[in-house]
Image (cartoon, rainbow, N blue to C red; front, side, top):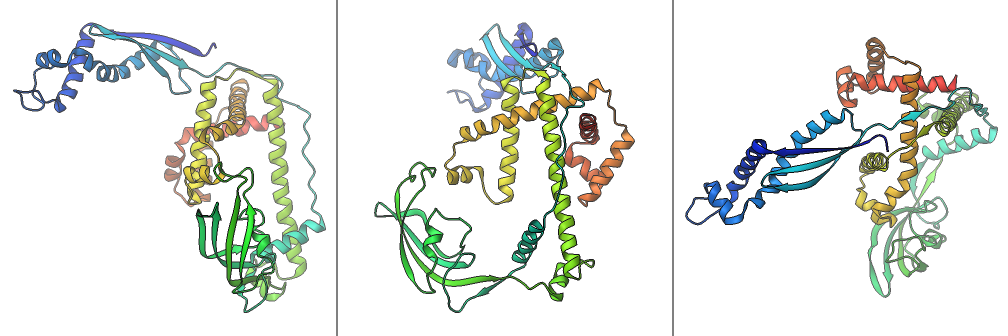
Length: 413
C-alpha cells in the first residue's frame, strides 16, 4: 500500500558502544559474581563470564527510541497506528532495525452532495401515546407485598432456588431470597413460566434444558431446579389523577389533556431525533460508497481496540467486567473483535470521508467559535471550561468536532 513505509535504521560504532555500556550498567545491579560485591562486577569480568550477547536485548530496548525518531524523520510521515519494529540483525558491532510506518491512507472523494436521500416523515399515533402513558404509569408503579395470591406475569416472586446438572449442584445456580420479575426473561427459557401459578411457601421442581446458544459446557444439557416461593410482590400502577400529575413534577401538566400533549411532544421529539440520525447515517453510507479508500488491516485493528476499550468502560459502569461478560454470554474475545470489525471499518471510512470533505471545502473553525462551543458544552455537564477541555483533549478536539459537524452539514445541504 502507498501509505506504508519501511525504514531501516542502523546503530553502530561509538553510539552502539555507549548503548552497550548503558545496558551493562542497568544489568550489573542484579549480577553477583564470586569475588565481587553485588552490582560492582567490572564489565570485562562480566562479559568474560556470560558473554556480550546477554546485553543485546536491553541494548536494543535502549536504542529503539532514538532509532524510531530517526525513522520518523526519514519517512517524513505521521503514523496513524502504533508502528511495528523488527530487529533485522544484532551483534557486538551494532543493530539494524526495520520500522514499518503506516500513515493516513489516500482518499478520493466521489459524489457527496445531493445524494437523493430523503428524511422520514414523523407522525405520532394515538396508540403510541397510550402505550407511553402506560409505560410511565408502570415506571411510577408502587411495589407492594402480597399476603396471598399466585405468581403471575408481571409479578415479582422472591425465591430460593438450587440447580442440578447430571445429579451435581450447578456452579452459580443457587440463590436465596432472589427477586425475580416474571416476564423479565432473566433465567433460561421455561424457568419463569414454570413459576406461574405457584403460591407463597410452595416448592416446585422444574425440569428444563439449557439453550443451544448457551456456554459450551452447559448448552443443550438437562437441568433441574428446586424452587421455593418465599414472597410475592406486585406492582400497582397509579391512577391518572391530581396526585399523579403532582408526582410528575411538571407545572405545565395538570390534566389528562396536558399530559397527553406532553407525551405526544416528547415522542415526536424522540422520533425526529431518530429520523435525523437515520437520515445522516444513510447519507454517510452513500457518500462513503462513492469514495475510494484502501484501509490497512492495522488501522481497522487499532479502531477495534478503541471500541473494545469503550465497551469495557460501558460494562464497568454497570458493575460488570469484560471477563464476566464473555463468561455469561459464552463469547470469546476474538469472536467479539470479529463482530466489531464491520463497525470499525464503517467508522474509519466515515472519519476519512469527513476529514477529506473538510480539506476539499476549506472548512475552518476559529478559536472564538471553539471557545464558545467549549463554554456551552461545559455548562451542560456542570463543569468549568478548563475541566471540560482537559477531559476531552483540549481546544483542538473541539475544533475537530466542529469541522466534522460542518462537513456533515455540507452532505445534508
